[in-house]
Length: 167
Image (cartoon, rainbow, N blue to C red; front, side):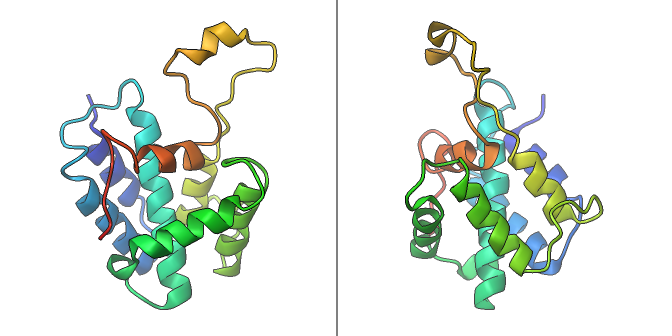
């Protein structure tokens, strides 16, 4: 089985700009203890998406601020998350648009299949909501993923047992 750390290392190996690579390194360092040995089963894929979302958030913030991803603080992450969800439900519509505006401002064409940042963004914006005709009972007590991977995953990596601590 693949562990969360192994999955994150595979995604990092897809390449990209130096700041992007440094963001992945920080995420790997942050996740070594809480994700140690956790296989990609049950809700671990959500945590892996959260790791990718955190790498993306660190990349955006570090690039915009002209700092190294290791210097992005917990407060900066909180401010980013609050700004992205202001006035909207997490993971839907405006939150995704907020992230996309920031990535586009950094020069990424989010449809470019050769841009590792854009490829990862498309991967973590897959919407995992159940179909509209699904019975509520079928979903409420399951490990089924809800919403886009970047949003549900980011929440997952800031809660036990997958919790990372930035400061």
